[in-house]
Amino acid sequence: MAIEDYKQFVFAFLAAVSFGLISIIFVLTWVLHYREGLAWDGGAAEFNWHPVLIVVGFVFLQGIAIIVYRLPWTWKCSKLIMKFAHAGLHLLAFILAVIAFVAVFDFHNAAKIPNMYSLHSWLGLSALLLYSLQLVLGIGLYLIPVAPVQWRAAFMPLHVYSGLFIFTAVIATALMGLTEKLIFALNNPKYKDSPPEATFVNVLGLLLVAFGALILWIATRPHWKRPSEQALLSLLSSSSPEDPAQGPAGPALPRPADGLAGEGAEDLRRRSTKQSDMDD
Ligand code: HEM
Ligand code: HEM
Image (cartoon, rainbow, N blue to C red; front, side, top):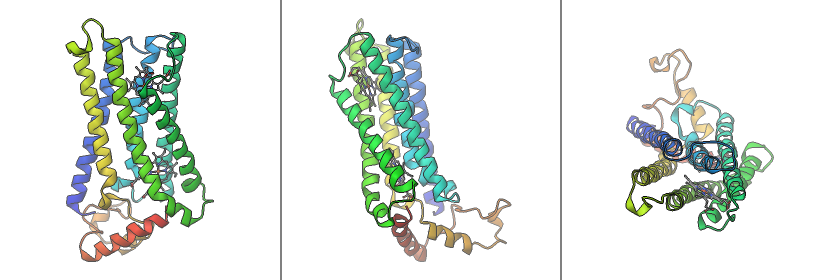
């Protein structure tokens, strides 16, 4: 990755992580300061786990899981380790989302509020079901080495598309949830009167959009994709041991300035991107 590219990547990544962490601080401040806090008692404080776990798990962790292969400082790790990191983060996001669902169903049942009547809940459940399918197919195709290489390669574009689609749908659903909750919960003054809580939660919505936009940007830059194993190996073997940039920890792959820059490297990158579809 050329140095300019590397700087842009680090900037986009740090911005995404900052928006994500600030969103988490916002959702916690909302439920702890403006609302009833957190508890597992069938009441409003139990509902509050729903937005908190969704923002931490289904939004933030899922977003980081999506871009984990693209972190250049992980390219010296084996693809298998990165698959475990990607799958593990997605699994954790899934578990937190399931607990968030249990919280809201439990709260509805205890308060005798009907279940699954809103568009928010329909979209939310659809997203969770698609996510679980994506997880099972991901593990079956890419983690357990039973599927033929051709199947893995053929399914990859669908895996990437549906992953980005579900992530986007989750953020859209969260925005609907925030709006619904403000309409239900704010009474005197009402949502339309713009009390401080309403403005605060509106800002949380904007932060989630900014986080999502940055993750989608990072995940769709072709030149930020993890190079194929073959390209990484040839870069590793071409770097000489006397190279002062390598340091004591062995081959410092990839350094921002080396490899995959220039004309020959462009060819290598094209082959590498093609090849990486085969070593998925
Ligand atoms: C229910 C808020 C994110 C899935 C609810 C309800 C509220 C709410 C007020 C009760 C009313 C209703 O059924 O529509 C929020 C807030 C969120 C958020 C503030 C984010 C910060 C999400 C996300 C999903 C989701 C991202 C899934 C992807 C559901 C489901 C229900 C529900 C399935 C239905 C539960 C039932 O019918 O008993 N949410 N939500 N929510 N939410 Fe969310
Ligand atoms: C790549 C989403 C689960 C294996 C991707 C990408 C997305 C994605 C958006 C594109 C990333 C990029 O281009 O850098 C998801 C979602 C999952 C999930 C939403 C869970 C619900 C899994 C699981 C595995 C897996 C369980 C099993 C190991 C892969 C592989 C790639 C990939 C091998 C290609 C990475 C590369 O091009 O270097 N996934 N994924 N995914 N995913 Fe997943």
